[in-house]
Image (cartoon, rainbow, N blue to C red):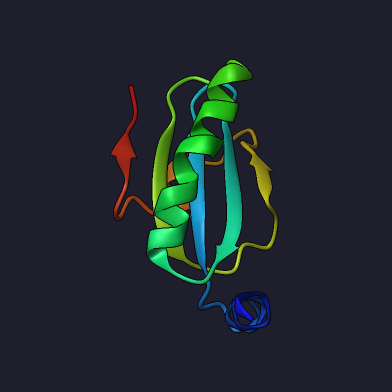
Length: 94
């Protein structure tokens, strides 16, 4: 029952997503959609662990309502990260 509701919320941009930003490689990753903020928060450690195992460094995160156009965004030359990442609800991970 939750999947149709999650899909509807995603369609209108109200689903919750985990946004992970890495310094090395310089990428932004989106994982979701989730029905609630708590579901996204619960899933986040697994995504962080996967990126750490792949060698990613400088991982920050945000749990947010959004509708990402792409699930992985490589940093483009000349584009500043501040234009691409909202820092609200962000935290630095060890």
